[in-house]
Length: 216
Image (cartoon, rainbow, N blue to C red; front, side):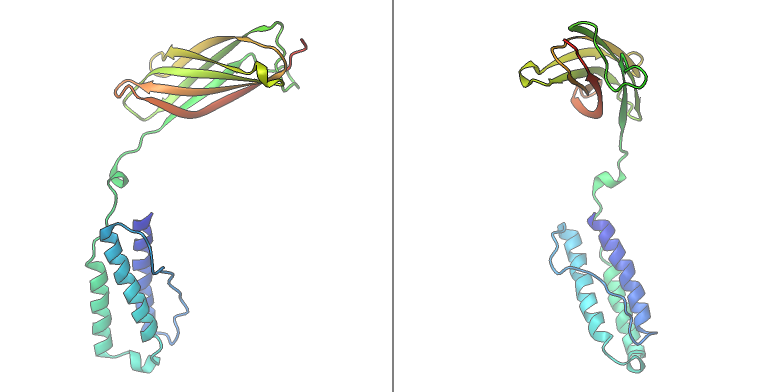
């Protein structure tokens, strides 16, 4: 973020200025690119930092014995004052509270011990999806859309099924799918939700997968 980068270079510039009056060679590089796309306010500060860097590099070419003088110290102080007189523009979202919503899924049935796939007993396969929600957002979740995406060995059998459900106490949910299983494959589950205040549909990064081994 640009304001963090600018703050870092301001601190770095102050440190290098102090070292320039105490060491022959600073051996401290400051990487300030000549062209950066900042906001208008921050671009002005960037230009001042770039000018200060170039001036400091020229100043360091002077022998140390000639650098330390009352005049040079006053000039350095004026340069640093010029830097800190510029305000850094920080975006509004930096001060805003962020909200997070975490959704956990549990899929039943589960594979038997030492197996990686579930073996359906018939082509009509019931799958239960249950879970809970953890959120610091006061706007509770009104409803969920859980999608089961079935991907088989033969693409022609692929399809999706979506269930809409309400959330109990704003935290817990449970739904059941009755899925048609044609061959072995995978069932991927994804979640979208609607919050009560904005009625907006949000996509969740919560996913789950079930491997299905079907004998036919």
